[in-house]
Amino acid sequence: MSLHKTAIALLGITFLLPGCATSPLGRTQLLMQNEASLASSAAQSYQQMKKDVPISKNKALTAYVNCVVTPLTQEVVGDNWEVTLFESDEVNAFALPGGKIGVYTGILKVANNQDRLAAVIGHEIAHVLAHHANERASAATLANIGVVAIGLATNRNQNSQLAIAALGLGVQYGIIMPYSRTHETEADLLGLDIMAKAGYDPREAPKLWQAMKADKKESIPEWLSTHPSDDSRIAALQDRESEALSYMEAAHAAGKKPHCVMPK
Ligand SMILES: [Zn+2]
Image 1: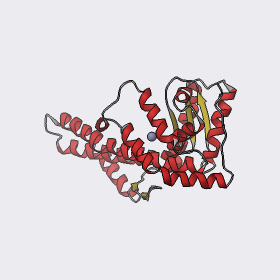
Image 2: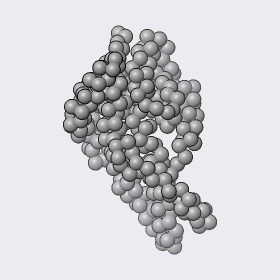
Image 3: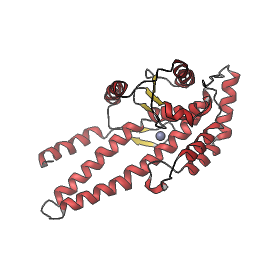
Image 4: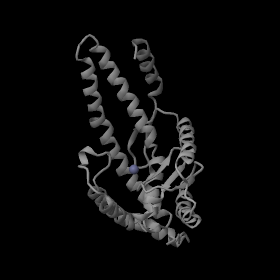
């Protein structure tokens, strides 16, 4: 990147900086990206995915996934939530800014009842509600500008490329990854609240992560992973269980009692 472009990028930052916000769990966040443009690029990726990845033709299974997701999206305002069931063995699900949800058939083997699937989707919806994509993109922008600035300072140095590469690695392991762990923990807890308020049983959330752990072939040490270890997320979910149970009981008292049966 030329000095000229860097100057523009740094200038851009000063305009974008007043983007401080607070996450739903009270953490201060730096949000520099425009939510509407994040949502529109997410919508484009989602459309593309629907062309590239086969969509399940199993009507009963699709109806079941919709049955589980609808009470969850009814708990959260804004966004035009949409869910697609993709035919894939991958044990995964996602939700994008703007409310586009994807569920892979592979996750239904692990999230094998309505409450566990609700725990997965609640977690993904929580990422969207807490603007995690925006926060990550903002952190990446700041990190890149920092790396470029150091690169310019060491421009004459033969080892400058190496210095930039090493710094990039430091940014990855020092900023971006711990950041993701914060996001995962936050999504777990906020997701637990969402599922319980929709009337699902929050006691199934730690059981889901236990099943996920059993499903995994090898475990990655927590410090190197973008996700908290299964054991620490299970413990954190159990800590919040009694609070979440009171949300579930209130939901049941209000007539919110989902009953979605997974087809055989
Ligand atoms: Zn997550």
